[in-house]
Image (cartoon, rainbow, N blue to C red; front, side, top):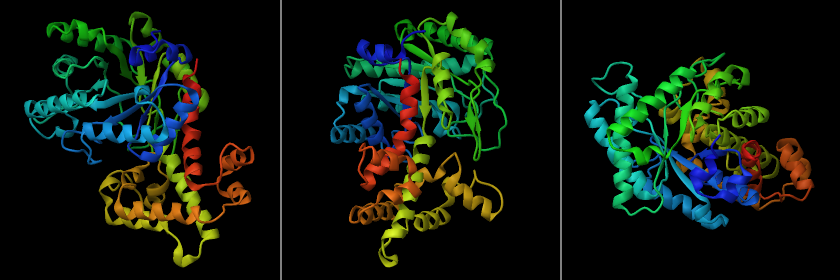
Length: 427
C-alpha cells in the first residue's frame, strides 16, 4: 500500500511514523486548536478540510471564501505554535453540489470557479465529486459523465496551479460515498460495501477521462478513491466496520498501485475499528460531527458545573440559549429530525449527526459560550466536580496532564476523539 502521508505531504520522516492520516472536517476554532495540539504532541502533520458547503467562492455557510479559510486556519496554527508547513489543507466534495438546481453547464461553471478559488488559496488535497445530478440531468449519472466532469475540474485545478506558480501541485481524490456526507438522515441497520468491480470501474473510467484531456501528469497525483467500507451513523446508532465484509474491496488495492481508499463518515467508530480500517487500506479517515459532538458534550458538562458554582442570575444558561436559538432558526435541523416534540428535543442535543454544530457561530450562542468560559475561569473547579461531569478529564487532572481551566477541559474532551484517530493512524 502506498504511503499516503508521503504523497500528501512529501515528508518521508512523517511517513515512517504513520500508516494513514485522519482528516479534521470542521471550521470550529476550538476543534481545530485541539487537533493542532494533538499534531504537535505527536510530531505529525495535520490534515484539515473544508467542504464545498462550508467554504466556497461566495462564502458558504461559514461566510468564508477559500482564502479566508486558509487565513483562519493559519491564525489558529500560529497561536497554537504548529508550523504552517505542517498543515495540509483539503477541499471535500468539490463540484456542482451546491448548484444542483441549476442546469448542468451553469452548475459546472460555478464548480470551476470553486476549484479555481480553492487551488489559488493554497489547498493541495482536492476531492473532485461530480456525482450529483443537476437540473436537466438523468436521476443517476453514468460513470462516464461523472468522470468527464471530474476531469474537467481537474484541468481547471492544474491550470490554476500553473497560473499561480504553485511549487506544490495538487493531489486528487476521486469517487464519492453513499449515503450523503454528514450522517444518514434515515435509520440504518447495515450499509452496503462498495462492490470491488465498481471500484475498479470507477478508477478505469476516470483514468480514461484524464487521458482524453491530456492530464496524464495529473493522474499520477490521484492518490485515493472514496469508497464505502460499510461504516455509517444515523441519529442514534452507529454501523460498525466489519473487516470480513470489506475484505474483497480491500484486496482491490493490489490492482491500484499508488492509490489508497478514503473513508468518510468514520465518526463514532470503535478504536479497534479505526485501526482495522487503516490496516485494510482505508488510509484516509474523515471525521467531522464526531469532534463537534465531543465539543458539545464538553460545553454542556461545563454548563452543569456552572449551575453548581455560579449564582443563578450570573449564569450563561448556554443550554437554554442553544435550544431557544435552534427553535427560532430551525433551518439546519428541521428537515432532518423527525418524531414528536420530545423526540426532536433529544435529537437537537444528542443526535450523532450533531446538527447543533451549525449554530455555534450564532452571535447569541457564542456570547453565551464566552460567558460560560469567563464564569468558570473566575472560579475554581474542584476535582471532585470533574469526577461527576467530566470523568476522563478528572483523571487527566489527577495525573497532572491538564489543569482545570475551562478551555483546557474542552480541548481535552475533543482530543479524546482525535487521539483515537491518531492512534489508529500510527505505524
